[in-house]
Structure formats: C-alpha cells, structure tokens
Image 1 (tube, protein in one colour):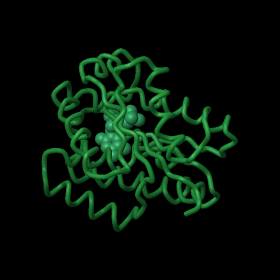
Image 2 (cartoon, protein in one colour; image 1 turned 90 degrees about the vertical axis):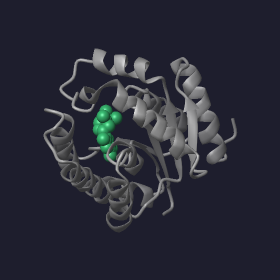
Image 3 (spheres, protein in one colour; image 1 turned 30 degrees about the horizontal axis):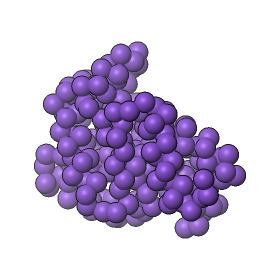
Image 4 (cartoon, protein in one colour; image 1 turned 30 degrees about the vertical axis):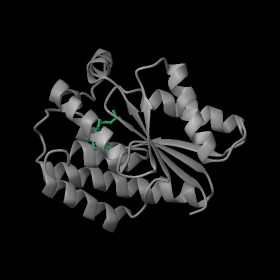
Length: 208
Ligand code: TMP
C-alpha cells in the first residue's frame, strides 16, 4: 500500500463529516491527492446496502444479519474504492470503518465482537494508518442528529443510552492502540479542525 488510510470515528452527530471535508480541503492545499469517502456506502452498490441499514425500524435486522450487511457493504467499497485509491498513492479519508462495527454492533456481546474481528481479518484485511475519534457529549450530538431532517434515522432511534454506551466504547477503544487519536469534539468546528490538523500534519510529516 503506497497511500495513506485515515478514518474518522465517533458517535452520531459528532461532526465527522464536516471535519472530513475540512481535512480534505486542507490536505489539498498541501498538494495531496485526497479521496473522502464514507461507510456504509461510498460507491453505488454499497450505498444501496446503506439504505437497508440506516432506514426503517430499529428492529428490522437481527444482530448477525446487520453485521453481515455492514461487511457486504464494506467489502464492495474496499474493492471498488478504497484499495484502488490507496494503491494509487492517495490519502484516503473514510467517514467510519470497522471500528464503527466493533462499537455499534459489538458493544454488548463479546461473541459478536469476536465475530466482527474475525470477519474483518478474513474479508477486509486492512487496518487504518490513523483513526481520529471525535469525542462529544452524547446529549449534544443526539440533539444535533435528531434536528436533521433525514430518512436515515434508524440508529438515532436507539436513543441516548445507546449513544452514551457507544461513546464510552470509543473512549476505551482509543486506549488500545497508538493509531487512535481522541479529539475533543465539544469545541467549535474551527478548533476541532485545528486539533485534527495537528495530528494529521504530524502523522504525514507536513510542514505547517
Ligand atoms: P453515518 O450517519 O455516520 O453515515 O452512519 C450511519 C449509521 O450507521 C450510524 O448511525 C452508525 C451506523 N454504523 C454502524 O452501526 N456500524 C457500522 O459499521 C457503520 C459503518 C455505521
């Protein structure tokens, strides 16, 4: 792999998408060839699977079916978008990746978590070079999420407790590997961008 693979993680409404665009623009100012993409989705077939996952009733899928749908979407995205871009030397920024599945689908059940880790090894096989976790107060982020007019509310329907558990999951995950960088998302967008840029510019050895 010649490019770099950076992922953005955090609970719903944490500002990942806004920060992803800011980061892409900044990296382009430094002459980097950047691709900003997202999961679930990022390419036609995977976006179709996304609709099955983020719309509708919260209980529409069993735990295992839901995990398999996320991995079907991820595998397609990997083949069609992520690997080609990384192999061309691009800096790929992805809004969510396998860490989201570990946090959201593996949070309360050790067997499901193990299944996710095994599936990831066998059907995905790549690990991000850097993962920025935007940490935010779940009350704030859920209000932000709920105020958006969108069909994609399935995960918001799980409520505050679900988001609070996910937040704690991310905080614990951040301690497990040095690729994780926890960013305090309870600040202004510009401040959060500065904190992210600090980490990314150091990581890519870019002169400020
Ligand atoms: P997004 O709103 O950040 O694009 O993500 C859509 C929803 O999908 C979000 O509520 C989190 C959820 N999700 C999972 O539950 N597991 C996953 O593996 C991914 C990628 C997203």
